[in-house]
Length: 278
Image (cartoon, rainbow, N blue to C red; front, top):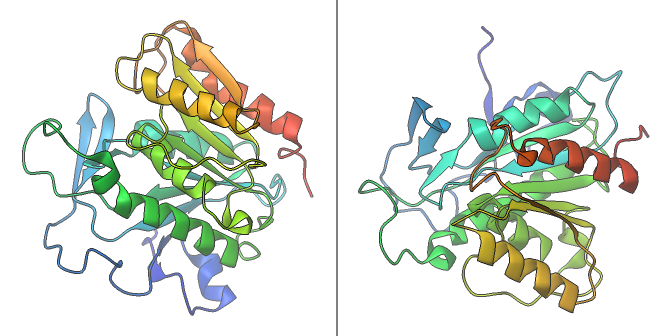
């Protein structure tokens, strides 16, 4: 097995970046977590696949398509996990490989998570506070991918963001940035959005895709509220509300209509022109 390269994304030449598989987002310690001492943990074969906890060093891992099939479109993928963990396979790498096979470059974002000190989600967890590190990492990931778009054979004007649950909150932070030029060129939020205080929603956002299930006991209110906020700002999100699927379906097949959310996403990208080669 080839050794996976872990390098700093800033200040490196094109040849180095082109060989990279995993790239650190920040040139040194990620800002705001300089005092963190926890050690990253990866757990395989959980009921939701591979899970990563206690992330201190945020990265993106590139899943690049065959150059002969590359469309020039790239997608940064942010998994969920309540900012305490990352469901990295079910909600990131599996989707990345699916997109990669269809000529779309995928960049799996491993963003910072707060230290997990107990089982489950602590009562009263403030997701605005816990999520500020992951949201900053998401915005930085856009900068890094755009900076090296040529090396990864993607068009800097065709880079989108796909997020699940808490990862959808990371996506919303990138989407709603005050600087319109720094926003992703499209965004897809799967069973999630801003879980805490609703941020200001500007008009004329890039195209937005949303999907969730009616029986989602975790994110139904959040997803619906964000859709309504987008519509109130005169944006027109593409919305798919499945009759069943629960929360956290990701790439898991359950025999429900939510199994096909990624097909619907691809059809939407096709309609937007992001699946055509340039």
